[in-house]
Amino acid sequence: MRPFVRSAFALACAASFATAAQAQQSTTLKMQATWPASLTLYENFTYFADRINKVSGGSLKIDAMPAGQVVPAFEVLDATHKKVLDGAHSWSGYWVGKSKTAILFTGGPGGTFGMDMIDALGWMHHGGGIELAQEFFNKELKLNLHWIPILPSGPQAFGWFKRPIKNLADFKGMKCRQTGMAAEIWQRMGMTTVNMPGGEIIPSAQRGVIDCAEWVGGVEDLRLGFQNVWKYHYTPGMHENVTIGEVVINGDVWKSLKPEHQELVKSVAAETFVIWWAKWQKQNADAIKELQEKHGVRILRTPPEILVEFLKTWDIIAKEEAAKNPFFKRVLESQRQYAAVVVPAKRFYFPPYSFAANYYWPEKAAGDAKAPADKAEAKKK
Image 1: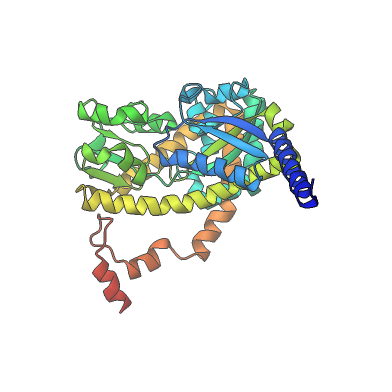
Image 2: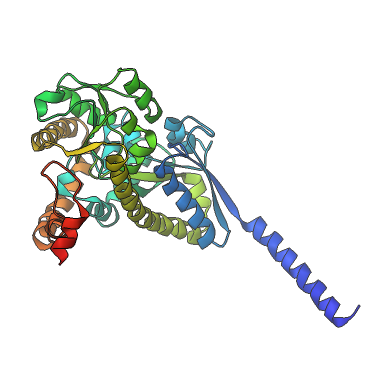
């Protein structure tokens, strides 16, 4: 055999052995989301999975599956605990049936003491929020899980209505699709609420079963088809102005990962949080434009009295829950203490978003979210 041929053969064998060794060393985690594949929330999950594969050089992979692939959407938490799944991509608000404390790890259905999404992420990483979440799932719920924040799906809109609303009295008696603790708040405020999965909202609206509904807002609502049944869309809302989803991994699976893979998962989750959220903001802006210009949707400001009443009612319910649930109280107080430092400082130090926005993009009318581009150009000149 000629030297060149022998060298080529040796290289081919070495490459083959290296590929086989890499395949043997590769770890794949089977994980399921609570979302269908059609939603942008699921795209947060697939971005995470894709980045894990690339950053690890293929040594760690996520088999990302949509809702229902292995278990029903709302069973992913228990399935991960039992190791039916290696992990899940979800939202803690779905677990309030186990304990209402779960809602606080989404941010909470209220003002979150004035914190915005970055503040809430700060509380999680620098104010003890992640440690409290870990203790909650492991010790309070007795679940064998590792918890990581990943999905910033807010601020969310107030909702869709079949007719205009001007004050609190206008929606009393209306039947609306709401979920979790937010539904409990709306009920206290006089609304009749109905809980249903996202896929049932539009058919129920078409049959007249419900008069209004909340989902997410922007691109998510456009994809679901709200514009085909209702034309009055109100924003903002205070029910999920901060709302954060999660990745949970079975505790034994997490411990079996190499330390460098654990750090990689945490780092990629943090990257996913920021990069996906930035993309989502642009998707929402494009969706708002399409809803207005193509589908004739009126996007209006939520009457302030409704938002203030929502905050007041949430504070009452939170106080009641804290009185009977020590861990709920502990988490709520942790958020309050962090916000007490960050929120007043940020309010004083940072310019309001509306300050420069209104200078460059003056609003057409007080209740309209749209401003003509020629006004903005004239202001620049």
